[in-house]
Length: 399
Image 1 (tube, rainbow, N blue to C red):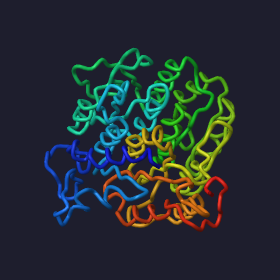
Image 2 (tube, rainbow, N blue to C red):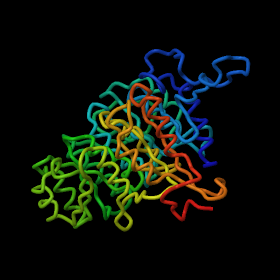
Image 3 (cartoon, rainbow, N blue to C red):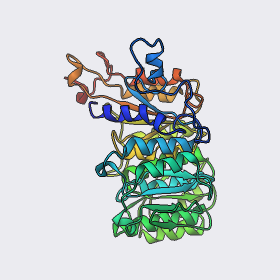
Image 4 (cartoon, rainbow, N blue to C red):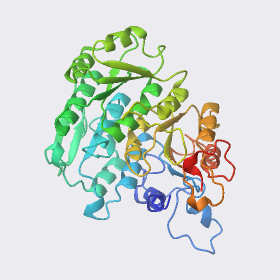
């Protein structure tokens, strides 16, 4: 947990350095009363709340408090890449059209190896102020794997001046995902052995794919409930019988599509019930080198609302750095879903004699307190806390 402290301090400060980081897209350059402020003094009555506690941080959680995904993406980029020196500036930045959540989920592969590019969001060809501020502050160096480009433009997005850019485009979300897959494969020098296939129609079931793509570099392709588009078929054929991981239950992607996928590779379905349960299923899942396998203490987790699909793209880099954790979805912002409560109890850290020798969980909360309330954040914090008595008592958490 000691390594988390610098990131936590950056997260507290970035809402000040980015006008939009904690509320809106930067159109109003003013300090909101509930934004954290560096330098509060001992004689100020609101020092603790003004510094951001507990709204932006608790002992086991850090909030990226954007009022929308555009602001969240800018804040995440600054948290992962503080850009105080050449050593912590990104190689390249992926600029993605916020008008289609599927572009964001598929583009999360650019946050993974070999690019490690933070994702920023453009509103078509218009550049929101938060994104413009982040682009200027980050100062991308240029990615060898992207032809020395500083900016990877995904879709019909803005073209900021002064940056070496390359473009990835497609006529629809399926063709764009295919193009991103090919772009990533060319940079790696080979097609990936694993591919994630997600629903193009039910965003909640597709959102967890973004976190995995960012961590692994495995691409995300899309299908309809009862149809496999030609672009997806062609992309899978280019992988030469890959392992295909299909996210969501048959109600989301039919068995007919599953059978069609089976003719192009080995298919494993992951996910059951609603989007919340499916995100937990994916967090638990492991198959050889594929999957998070988070079934014990000592991990990072990222929490976002299931009805804010672009937050999956905005937060993807949190799953590819720091504590490397899966995306767990919440159905609403006012109470913690029962399956999530039970899952966090299952992986809650414990110790026998000395908590210093234990392992720890940490959670990133994505979105402001209108998206995920402070009460829910506090509940998550308590379930992530290391405790003296742990009913499962995993051997890795004992001392």
